[in-house]
Picture (cartoon, rainbow, N blue to C red):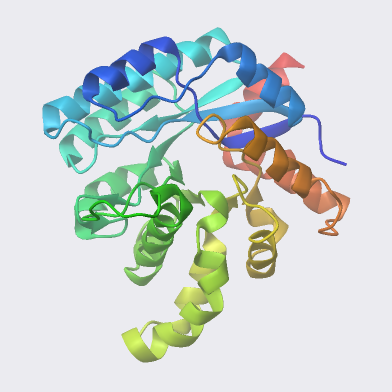
Amino acid sequence: MPDPRRIDVHHHAIPPKKAELMRRAGAPHVIPWSLAETLEVMEETSTEFALLSNAIPDFSPGRDAATALNRASNESTAELVADHPARFGLLAALPMPYVDAALAELEYVYDELHADGVVLVPHAGDAYLGDAPYDPLFAELNRRRAVVLVHPMPLPGAGPVPVPSVLADFLLDTTRGALNLILSGALDRYPDISFILSHGGGFLPYAASRVELLGPPFFGADPERITAGLRRFHYDLALTGPSALPSLLETVSADRILFGTDWCAAPRAAVTECVRNLDSGRWDLPEPSRALIDRDNALGLFPGVARRLAACV
């Protein structure tokens, strides 16, 4: 049975202030959101606590616009967290590729807004996670022993395509970012950053054997580095349904898997269907594994959340 006190590590919120910010920044659309419906969905999915994140694409090019939008978005989410500290936490957005602005925002969200972690998209411009432009930011994230949710966006340089990005490109974006973290050696250089890959790791679990087989002969990659890297990541279950779960469960053990829903970016019916599938019993997950996925892994990654929830008992 699922733990009725689940912790959702992949959860979005668009309160009115943030919605207006996005409209002014030129967002092509703004997802409807209400606190009342959010609490209903959390009840339906046995979720006690959700870590709120909103990956912020740069709708208005330029450092100043990106910096202002990320700051305002983080402050808006922090207000919601402050009003409901027993239900929500904050994974703050950073304005990459503007490294100096991202470092300044990182200091602000940790020291002033008391963020629980950050969210990064797999690429900034043409640079992917693990490329040299990220090094100063990763050094500080490593110093802070930060948790980073890797949340995808449309692929860089991709023009209009007939297939919506959410159906395939998002999954490839996460996969590219994860592979670059492994192959670039970034996971070794920054061992104290904990990376959570969205949506069950995109295509990564499905492609894991291919990467292990072809990485060494084609790219001279260390096979042990590849295998260790695949198991270094944490993977959230947002929108990870019956076609994806077997690959994920074959690739990593339960201690690397976290509960997630993708509410409100995903429709309510999609969220509840994925959770019903997870709870259906078809995956033969023993109770200790369920406890890790539902709650315990998240408590280990986010000690601040663990302390807050313990104080509310």
